[in-house]
Length: 535
Image 1 (spheres, rainbow, N blue to C red):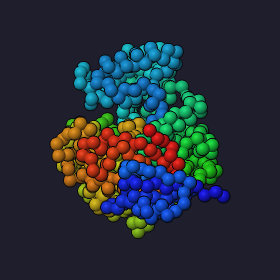
Image 2 (cartoon, rainbow, N blue to C red):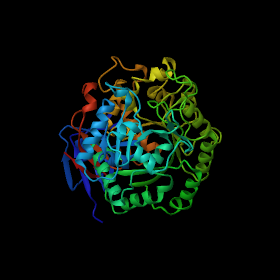
Image 3 (cartoon, rainbow, N blue to C red):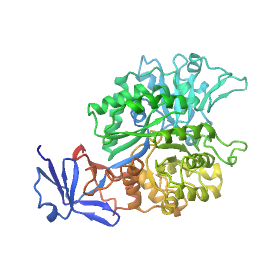
């Protein structure tokens, strides 16, 4: 066998906090040596690459996103820029004009809190009817926990005022008819009005998103693209991609089963039969949803919302359902990661996990995704039970404008508590929940470092005691994310024995002004010792 060796020299290579080296040796995709140029150049190599003083980091590992939906959004009607209901209607009409003949229209990204003219409210079916009443139209809110359908979509599915969805809500108008607003588990119902895509279309969107992620310096993702009854076909698509090596993005599957019978079917099929190399394709975790989003007031709270008396959010799973799913996963040695944003949801998840533990140990590393609204006492319990938390600092860009209104200043002061939880010793990692936010890591890092929105406000940062140090943020995004996957000895560091997944930056993240960090670009991305993206 011919050994393929590559040496990188003249770099500022980040190894760990306060530790940088100039050079490293890679053999067959594995880092074999790090050190000075002189030390590493004593080895023979097929190729020597001069980094020209550039800064090198381990490849980022997004600990929670939805890769296939990133690709889908890149191909759908993008509503992120809309600043009013009228503008959404106009964007929809223009999309139809440019895509004549489509039989249904899907869009996402609208956010009523960003409306600056007209009514500042959720969309309804009458708004979408102004775009078209001939074809089904579904527009997802940016959070993905609220979707709106037009009258054609609602009627095509036979939905009426008597339709009930477990763990979801279909809002009704004064006459008792659906007004077009669907949340939580009801979202998938209204979205079923959109015709199914072919496997070729889905694969194309997956690969488009994978290439985009690699261009941003993401070399690994922990992605929830599989859910409920469609799981067999989606796994078939994913296996085909990795069996035929169509991408080098490392992929850990997160599979969502809210219905325990669907999960049982997974255990009898894919769990037993699916082939995973655990290097590029990993078996991953059961992903559950306990609640919704703060922006839509569907995050589950222990007390009423400060700005909506009588409202405490939506329970996507009852405590009993959550516990049954966690127990069944634990019996089969499967890690669980649960979406929990409100303090009520987080309380429920902590209790469910604790019931799976013996002597307070968390050997499967059951974790919490988002973990936004927390009390100090909850943070201490999470740390004591060693529950990994998958944070999205970029959420601050929007949420810092609303969180005090939603939950009050006292609870807001202990929420989005990245630094506190890190200092308490809990395992934390970072991701973006893309396509809720763009999967670009650098705005995410900026928010964790500055506690500011992307507009640079507020001055001094939002509860600045929760600012993290830059090296700790990078570690959370690399080795911290790898910990969730039990791969902290495999990837996430640029040390001997680790895979050569690394990125070369266009500027030095450690010395530039913090305001520039969100604008950093990746010049090169390497996976397994091979450059898979270069400017």
